[in-house]
Length: 218
Image 1 (cartoon, rainbow, N blue to C red):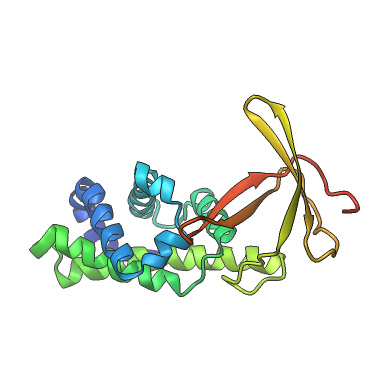
Image 2 (cartoon, rainbow, N blue to C red):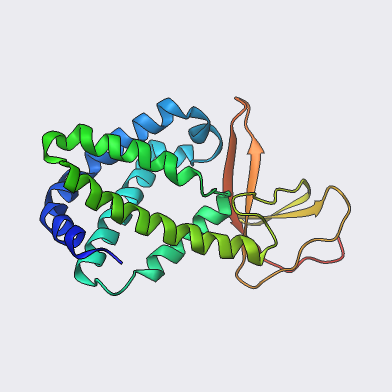
């Protein structure tokens, strides 16, 4: 868990980082998408980015994780980490992308907080980041392994929409079948699946949908 020295530094700087976390995350995403525009085009939900919900989620999770480590040095917020890891796995997030996030996140922290980010402060928050990142990578690796997938290699498969049923004015059911004619995978109650389509501008956007019934023969 967090070292004693880093815990003291994080505890002392948490108010400053927490107070500026919204500005930090805004700068982070601006930097990230300027350097890696394909992430906004093909991985991140552009609607959530426009609404700001993704930025708020990142800011809240980092601040919450750091605060939890300081208050509970011998524990880890596994429930929060599991929710994030399931979302990441549904998108096919790969371990190497955590280094990309770290690069632009710490550049944003230094840009916003300036001289307050001493080498000691940077080292303490770097320890927080990798504790969180490595925990997520491990959970995501288990989720991928359960489905027989290499970490970060999302098992995309072509399907055809064969019917659309208007259940209510607000709910529609889509019936699909594998385009390759092979059997549908096993179904778990409560499961959702990720669906991606190419938009007119060439972007690949991913959304999650609930499965409302177990697959039949087709």
